[in-house]
Amino acid sequence: MESGRVLAFSGGIGGAKLALGLQRVLESGMLLVAANTGDDFEHLGLSISPDIDTLLYTLAGLDNPEVGWGRRDETWNFMAALETLEGETWFRLGDRDLALHVERTRRLRKGESLSEITADVARALRVPSKVVPMSDDSVRTRVETDEGWLDFQEYFVHRQCRPVISAIVFEGAATARANPDVIAALADPHLRAVIVCPSNPFISIEPILAVSGMREALEGCAAPVVAVSPIIGGASIKGPTSKMMHELGIECSAAAVAMRYGSLLDAFVIDEIDANICADLQLPLVVAKGLMTTIADRECLAMAALEAADRVAATR
Amino acid sequence: MESGRVLAFSGGIGGAKLALGLQRVLESGMLLVAANTGDDFEHLGLSISPDIDTLLYTLAGLDNPEVGWGRRDETWNFMAALETLEGETWFRLGDRDLALHVERTRRLRKGESLSEITADVARALRVPSKVVPMSDDSVRTRVETDEGWLDFQEYFVHRQCRPVISAIVFEGAATARANPDVIAALADPHLRAVIVCPSNPFISIEPILAVSGMREALEGCAAPVVAVSPIIGGASIKGPTSKMMHELGIECSAAAVAMRYGSLLDAFVIDEIDANICADLQLPLVVAKGLMTTIADRECLAMAALEAADRVAATR
Image 1 (cartoon, rainbow over the protein chains, first blue to last red):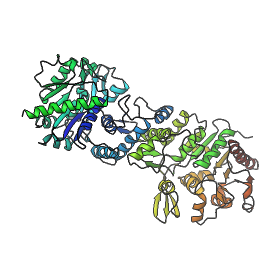
Image 2: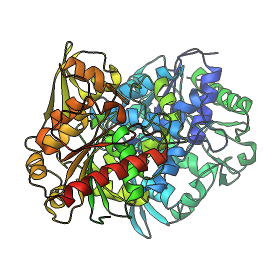
Image 3: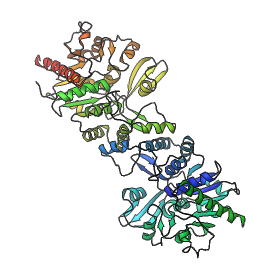
Image 4: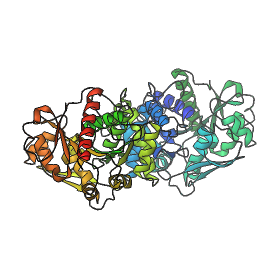
């Protein structure tokens, strides 16, 4: 088995599950996760980074296993009091979770970077992997819908994905500077693999790829790039991926995701149920159980992705 | 009994207790409380107004009766999580209390005034009295100590009043514009009384008096001005008043407080134990139980102060 570092591209819930699997099967410190920050937003005057937080909590073992976001053993007294004060309560912030938002907001206002703050939080929470934002510059995902342009969280959480989308943009991505640790990892000849986590391609992975220089760095990377399908049997595991694909006129299938990533990929990990639909892809396929219910499932899927990468590397 | 409006000058805990007594013995809507904002500060990026909050919670019946500040039935999970993140935890912010700070901070940043925000919070919490900041402009109490100049909360909470103080200043007070409702009340010929609550004279009442135009408006006010002594038997009921008076070279007695207020007062409410020490004051004295343990105590002391004012008014 190879022992070089692994870079994962990840959004929130589904991506974080695989990231935990990767963390558990790799030696400590060998995983670098580039997190989507296109979903970040300012709410109640606080700077919130949903995907970074889900990754940090999941990798620290503090995640809420029922909903996939926020912290376990959470309480909601802040929200209850805010409701009494007639504040906005559509984005749920738990009492413990709030500490991270308040502390991050305070430090960002002081001029510290999201990377620095994330590194300190990861250290404080004893996360053995490195989690970095895709960029320290602001990138904001916005969606065009039948009700006009909406900020991502407005569409995703407040409107619960009800508006029909026709386009997605990543404002600021073209000029945002890619995280230097990610660029350095992609240029590292000893990088073992790039794993594209089973996150929503359109709203979690493509914002990362849209950051200035990121796609080129990934294309020039010597390590194998392996994606894990977020679609199992024609449906997304969680979240609105299938609804979005339908509205964007893209077939909701594992094969369509692979085609969307196109020549970036060196291998693709799919569930057994999708073997037929992916048969025509000009890409090495690895079949593994796609649904990550248990911790063992996450480890198995992580192993499958790493082994796929190692097999690609062995042929080079 | 008179039925005009009553204006109270108040700091936090002790003042809020009497304000509640006043609220309970007056008809709904007849109490206006001018709150000290010299203790206000920015902490964790949040705008905190300790005296306003203690007043609002107390007048809404949401106060924590054990400590006198913050909310009853409070939880502390935000603080616990912040400690894990190595954030600053010397100023305790409860989960429910935090909602008020986050909401106020958000609205202040939008350009709304502290008066507007306070009025909305009071309405949401169903406070039947009006609570206003002494000014919407920033006034910051700072103390000169044997360890240098300190911001008030740094001295008061973080250092727990351990440094020895030699001077107190109210930065910004000279140019801060007094709350117009307070100025209007003081100019109102139908104002029944001004009650100076049993708050610390130096750090709770004098900042209010230091606001531009406030002392002059109080001096020109037609209504009787009645102070309730915060000192009982040579000791402050709560807080550092006696230590501060000692360090400032002022005798810690009810009489010294009355002399400090000087010609502003038309009557002074003291505990029976202080009748002798106050005997030489050239001021009508009213003796009442000074210690407010029960709700009935607060009502009795409030009645004593109002009756003192009414007696003064009857002689005019």
